[in-house]
Image (tube, rainbow, N blue to C red):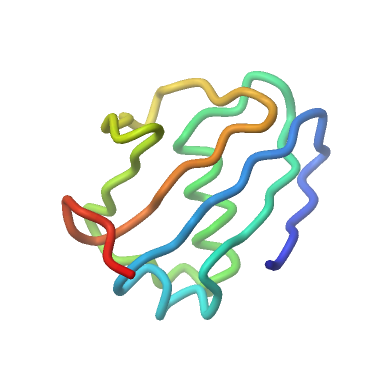
Length: 89
């Protein structure tokens, strides 16, 4: 699992599936983000790891619930990021 440090007060894990996984090159990425960071912030950090090449319209879920880009994250969150509605193995 790769780790990206972004001034982190909290740590979140992004589990990557499908085309997102292929773009990032890893199935799981740990990010350290500032308190108050959103799903959009996490996706921007993930896109940086993929040289800006994340699939358009990526689907983000936490505990099987869809999240929008403005959803605030919390320390310890595990979110899934995929290019399709249901994560693949």
